[in-house]
Image 1 (cartoon, helix red, strand yellow):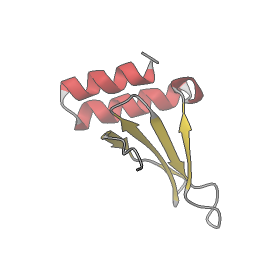
Image 2 (tube, helix red, strand yellow; image 1 turned 135 degrees about the vertical axis):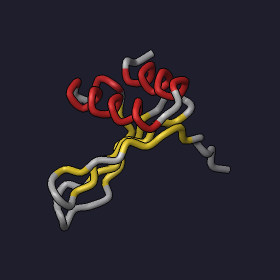
Image 3 (cartoon, helix red, strand yellow; image 1 turned 180 degrees about the vertical axis):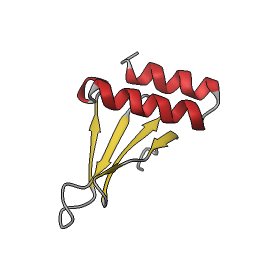
Image 4 (cartoon, one colour; image 1 turned 90 degrees about the vertical axis):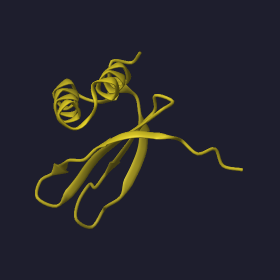
Length: 84
């Protein structure tokens, strides 16, 4: 039986006009990066560590989360991004 992860929140963004660059945050602290490389190379997924996410991207993620999420969830995402 497959172990299902409980999602917390999704950061949705775009690279360029048509390329997805999303991060899915899960209750267990894992982060799934879903992205497109080019128009013809789409839907790549890989689990990443907080250290794999550039600081400028972390700031964008936290800014969007602060505007969309309750404070408790924002603090949880912040902890995940800082590797705690």
